[in-house]
Image (tube, helix red, strand yellow):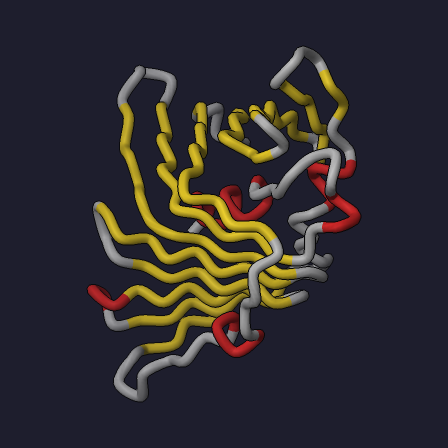
Length: 171
């Protein structure tokens, strides 16, 4: 669960055009490396829409879906036939991270958000990768491909549809 919350706090969009970006979608690879240099790689597709909606569809190594809408996070875990619903005390504003970023080199930016530092790689105005260290001292690298900006995304895709036979856990 914490892995997914850290991920959603780390998502960003494009720097420099932040005021004109309303939607962002991309395929992603998320590599998490622990302090013993052991790694796990997740892949999938994500979509985000202003002001504060996001959806992460994890495909490997396990299928999961993560939905974010304002003050609520819902994680669907089909293999476990469960849904985890968590209310969070503040907005998860994924676009805020970029608005705090400052340029540190031609393609690299630094953003500080919620006591964490994020390094963003941006090439030709498109975000390529985000790296940071989580609260467990894991090194996280999110790499994006097939990025799409300001393409129509229906609000309904951000609504979690929990199957009737799933157990629901509220945190």
